[in-house]
Length: 332
Ligand code: UT7
Image 1: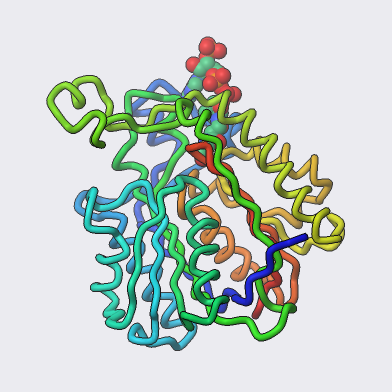
Image 2 (image 1 turned 180 degrees about the horizontal axis):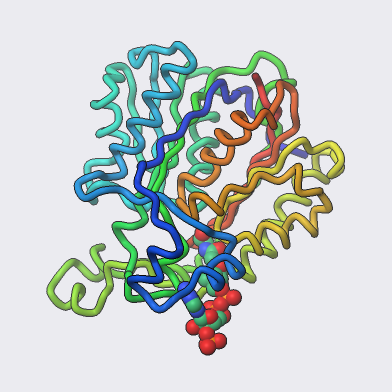
């Protein structure tokens, strides 16, 4: 049986920094080439922030846009959940910075650290509070400035990521035809060693040594993460359909995490759905970690691929390992 939540998404918006970094730009700074990046990952270009622009700035812009789009005033927001692995600083939480900048004077909030599953976890948390009736208007935000933790001497990671943010407004659902039908999340900490950033935490506080050893950057064993991601994303997607009595034909759109086009296509093949039902924008944005799924939803709305009542699947795997999927009815 599924785990329905009486909450719905009533708006999505994104913010991407305007500066584009193409594969050709990367060729100039690291030993790589456009052909490798395109064929191994599907990425053509990504957005990058200018110096001084942080995760909270992207998150704030996305939040302001979703408020404007839904005619919601900031004072009406009662909860802000920000998913990020690149907060402006260790503390305070990015949610507090966003709350202050947008003027959400009646909100509380906090950050969620779940890497590429950050947005689906943040959305679930926000929806639970709204579904329980204690909150009326919550913001779930996924935002990351991945370029702040990329090692531009490590070609195996620096080509993969980009910067971006997306925000969803979550409000009560009045009928099962417009809410969250099910979610299925799990974590497997045994995979933590394959994707992590070792420096700057309580185990390895920042020091000259941590900087010299390049410990403040993303470290990844790509092939391990790849295999896990393909297997878990397919299991989650198929499992959630099955336990809710749906078939792949019932799906209008799958919005998967955008880490690698080959992971997406492998998941899609196991799920048995055609390209038109799978959101792909990794070619333009790369992997924006917490940002990918809301960016996918925004593009899907803009491309006219989401309609009221559509059955939609969000699915992701990320560092941790974290895994997560949400099955919902699109509400507008
Ligand atoms: O969102 C969080 C979760 N993250 C992911 O899901 C990422 C999962 N992993 C992946 O997407 C892939 O494993 C990568 C894209 C990171 C790597 O692709 P791969 O097919 O697993 O390549 P590989 O690491 O096995 O490397 C193959 C070759 C190596 O050369 P040799 O040893 O065969 O001579 C690498 O040195 O490709 C080389 N290589 C590159 N060549 C040009 C690695 N990175 C690059 C590069 N440009 N940027």
